[in-house]
Image 1 (tube, rainbow, N blue to C red):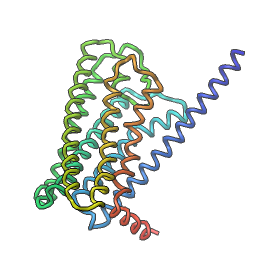
Image 2 (cartoon, helix red, strand yellow):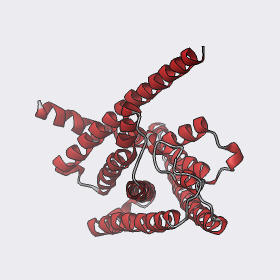
Image 3 (spheres, one colour):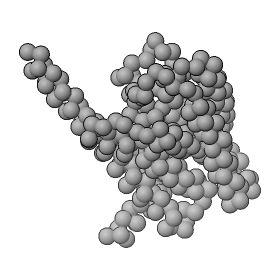
Image 4 (cartoon, one colour):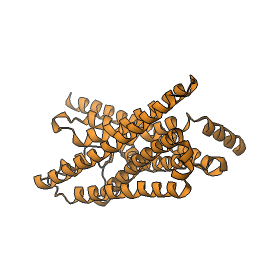
Length: 303
C-alpha cells in the first residue's frame, strides 16, 4: 500500500509539472511572437516613428527579455524534473529580472506622461517629447532600473546562507533567498532596502494616477460622447495593468512569513513575472487601431 501510494503521488506530481510546462510554453511563445511582431512593425513603418510607439517598442523589448529571464529555466525544470541552478546563475537571473521589470515600470510611467502631454498640453508636445527628450527618458528608465537592480542583487547575495540551498520558487526570488539567511542584520538591511524601493515605486504610481486624472478631466470637457468613452476604455485598463504590476511584487516581497504558502507564492510570482509580458501585448498594442492596421498590412506584405 505504501509503495502504491508513493507511485500514485509521483504520477500526479509529474502530471502537474507537465501541465505547468505546457502552460508556460504557450504563454512564452505568445509573448515572444506577439512582441517580435510589434517591434518589427513599428521599426518597419515610418509613420509609427513617434514618441508613443517608440516607448511601446521599448516596452515590447523589455517584455520579451523579462519573460525569457525566468520562464525558459522554469520550463526546463518542469520538463526534466531538475530544479538545480548554480549560485552565479541564480545571481545573474535575479539581476536581469530586477533590471528588466524595473525598466518596464519606468517605461510605463513615461508612457503615461506621453499621453498626458498629448491630451492636456498638445501645443507643447513637440517640445516636451522631441526625439532627444524621448532618448533621454528611455536612457533614464534603463539607468534607474540598473541603479535599482544592482544594490538589490549585491545585498541579497552578500547575505550568508545557512538554511539549506533550496529556493522554493520557479525562479530566484529575493524573499525565498532571504529565507535561507542566518544573519538577522543582513536580512533586515535587505528588507529595509525593499521597503524604500517600494515607497519610491508607490510615489511614482501616485504621479501616474495624477496624470491619468488630468487626462480624464481634459477629456470630460470635450463636448463629445466618443472622446470620454475612448479615454476611459484606454486609460482604465492601463491603470489596472500597472496596479497589478506594482502591487503583486510588493506583496510578494513584503508579505509576512505567516501568509506564505507554496501555492500562494507561485500565484503571486506568476502574476508579476509571467502575466504582464502577455497582457501588455493586449492592453497597449492590440487595442490601438493604428497599430492594428499596420500589423495587418505588415502580415499581408509578409505573405
